Length: 98
Image (tube, rainbow, N blue to C red):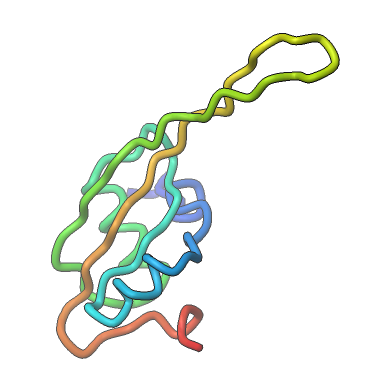
């Protein structure tokens, strides 16, 4: 697996009230590459943060429609893929902690 780059899989963490509430249960949320599979996401998170991942859930958030007030036309923001990663009991990712 010489061509595997975890930084191209995991783009950035999602910081919201819901994601902070899930952190208490050991679940961390990331924006990931659209083409990433659950296995890719598991390997990338384990390699980046040196933790054990129990399971990975993914979802695709559809982009919102936005209206251009000047021209009256509509455009669409891009879709984003989210991954919710559950860690083994007692493990945590320190960069998220308050």
